[in-house]
Length: 416
Image 1 (tube, rainbow, N blue to C red):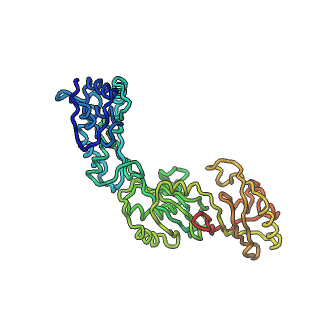
Image 2: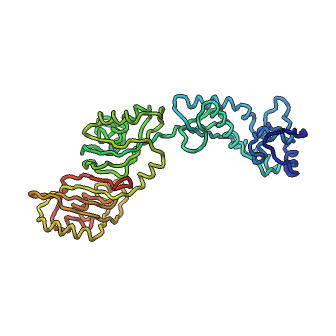
Image 3: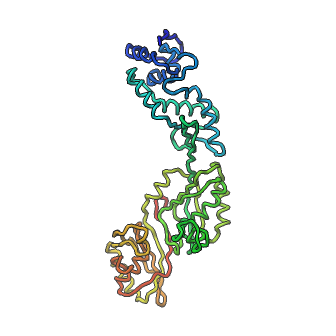
């Protein structure tokens, strides 16, 4: 195909047509490709130009009427159809940021690579990236939403061969701190061990070991507000089911899966939660979050403070002596027997940072402790059949039993 003489266009970005560029354009002219695919061969030349504008500046002439582009097979000619499909795919969801991607037949990508090799271009842009960009620009123009790759609400994937747009709905994240006042409440939904969540006679058909959890109590008003399809709870560690979480509360991020609405009133959500979970869970500092906050919460290893009630008839002086010894020595804790079925069996080294005797009664006493992250406090008190060394029971030389355990503070970066 012969090239036309490039027109002179004033007041518009242009580029120098060097001898190598002209030679590559001459070779490209022998192929029946659309203006978009011709211009893409020189996509890194002429900042601010569209690919059809690049093609025009290189004297491009279109193939005969009715001839499909040898590379994209007319996909760029149908870009407005793809915009309509994209908007239908996002119908029913609130979205303000989005990303467009595309899936192409391997044969199309192979034809493109062969054309690049034959033309000898050093300035090409791939059909995938050009299509994604053009689709995104037109969706932006139609909706006012912001296209790009940073923190999208929806990701649209155009399957060019099939003629369908697939939608990935990104989660909505909410963070806060929870105080757990109920000693029968697990942190997260606990599937029934027998049926693994399917429902059986053992769990009364619920699929759960415990009727409710902190996750479900916190998540319920958020699911109602967002129209989400589920939740994932990410806590900065977890307390035992029979332990209360007091003080400023435990930091968490709640991930709402496939939310239909993103603009929600967190003050109203907090008020609904306060009413529905009264006496069981309190949530403080509810705020919107982002995906990196999940990593921050999960990877944090703050020290923790506890109040622990211990059953054991021991003189006060002997308890204080044992606490002094405990502060001076590291603890070797093998994975506790009670969690060995779900955690790797290994030995962890931890320390008691501070320990104080706060109350003594007939046959029992109460301690305030501050420990390193990951310390199993019950096992440190009782010994866990020798799996924790040294234990308080071992240092005292008498059997001990934990009567109650409260987490009184999480010493994360937001506080002491």
